[in-house]
Image (cartoon, rainbow, N blue to C red):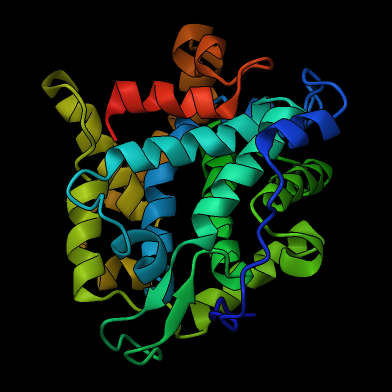
Length: 313
């Protein structure tokens, strides 16, 4: 089960307008996912939000995904607005209404349908000229799977373990998210155990090969988010935790040298978080505040404008 690009036939993105989608939704305020869904509680944890850095490294390790979703853009010099819009799209589906989720489906699906090209150089098993398209289910699956895998790991490491039933329930909710981004039916594994098998197969496939461009860009962007200088120490801590959370082979490919004690320090930090840091933190520190989450009654397009005004285009 490797995320190799599929054929480049004509995209099948929906042509329905956001207005029609909202009409089809029935009630604009009906949540796309139940308000009691576990995924909502998991993704509100600030420590889970920090797992995004690991997800980005995992995504960039796939040469074709990197070519299609990272290097095939004019925003490389200022990538953080694009990352903010991506996070907004996912959060809108998780916390928003049926109408908002369908609008994400329309807008993001249209954007993905316009992304297509060919690899400029050979990387690993993928020769120069390998085609890619933004709505390729195999590549979309790897992009989302990296996010999901990182989220599971962060929650269980820094918040609390999930039991088997919770892992499965959470997976089924992530599959609903995947449907919005074009991953329907068997495009994602039917069970959480299938996801675990998929990730293991990807790591053993030989398809994850970090190019020189990916290594340079990923390290420059992911390890240097736009934060105030006062948070430099926090940034360094998050960076070391991120590096340690990557599979060993990918650490090597991205050029991260072994640091004695880094794994032990990370394990001690995770133990402290589970036992003390997370349970004793006040809500304002532990959770992403609700007022910044997408809410029913506001079009996704308006939210995109808000992000553009805050982070740039």
